[in-house]
Amino acid sequence: MSPATLDLEDGQLTDEAIRSTMTNCSRGEAHRMRVPDWVHDCDPVHEVVGWRDPKAPERGWLLVPLGKAVVGLALRATPGKGVRATAMCDLCRTTRAPGEVSLFVAARAGESGRKHNTVGTYLCSDLACADNVRVLRATPTLKPDPGLSISQRRDALRERAAAFAAKVLATRD
Image 1 (cartoon, rainbow, N blue to C red):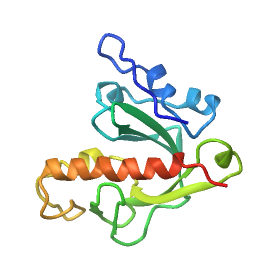
Image 2: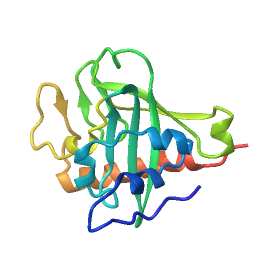
Image 3: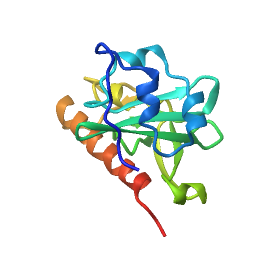
Image 4: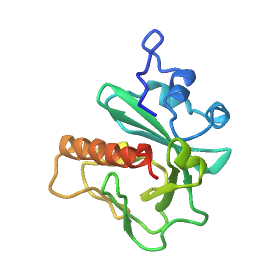
């Protein structure tokens, strides 16, 4: 599957446009996806956007920019309260307090995913990586990648998210 180009209606990101980007889930799963209101004001062509489904807490969604297109990924958090020690998110490279980083798995796209092949990575439990790279100063529970500007952290987040999306989209025999 290839990334989708988002069509914005009157400059607004619609639920249907977001659903059209989903590459590693069924149409039914994409249709049941709950999109928070704040996502409609985001720019997924330039920013990584992630959220958890409040009605299905194990479910997460990630919109990843790939050039001028966007790939949407369905994620599932492993059961539990997250990593029990201080841990670092693989995407935003922010060190988080215990319980604020979780293992997420994404089914591979296409036939491989239907055979239950997955790709896993450790992510911020709230999937707020785009917000975390904008933190100016470290706090006791949130420590962004040191020595990098916000712009550098944002670019690195996009690169790592694109690499993760590529693993999900890769065909596997």
